[in-house]
Amino acid sequence: MFSFQSEAIFHLGAFRITNTIIDTLLIDIIIFAASFVLAKNIKLVPGLYQNIVEIIIQLFYEIAESVSEKKVKKIFPYFMSFFIFILLANWSGLLPGVNSIGFFEKGKLVPILRSSTSDLNTTLGLALISVAATHILSIKTIGISNYLSRYFSLNPINLFIGILEIISEITKVVSLSFRLFGNIFAGEIVLLTVSSIFAVLLPLPFLLLEVVVGLVQALVFSMLTMAFMAILTTPHHDMLDNTRKARH
Image (cartoon, rainbow, N blue to C red; front, side, top):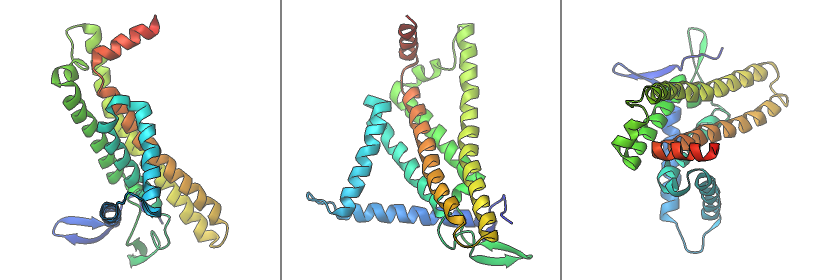
């Protein structure tokens, strides 16, 4: 049975090293290694690997530029970092041996590796980083006074709107974390259930579906983060002026 909670593989003192933490570390190593290899082998006449990376980066940069415009250079690194990590984390659960190779404890299989995004702790951490980075970037871009004016005002109506904005920031964390976790966790349960009944051929369509789901969820999380950053790095009075112009 697939556990809702990630399982501990070993302990470092009081700290639990779970299968999702190991998966996260392996993904980090892959990303750093790929970046190192690319950085060491950049050429004026690119090879196949560099060409593929440049095409992907260019495509996503244009997407980010269409949303964030002049602020793209500040926002794009966050957008791309979230996308790459979440995509690899989502797809890691589809690899042979992940969720299936491990040891038995109290009659239950404890997998050594498990997709990190199937753990609510990971998705909650990603959501908190996304929201925190958004607000830090907002303060750096528009200044503390403009930033605070979004939430606090002497005008009662604007103050009420500011309170709603604060509540919406809390719901962002809940929405981002549970959407990603729910889709990946549910997908892995479906794959595990189907594979335990029919080991050959029938799981393939579900596997292909999860490949698409993993890509879509990585895009949704990273693009929502990019949109939030684009909004919060725009001065509040500029947004109000644009809203008034749109109404007229």
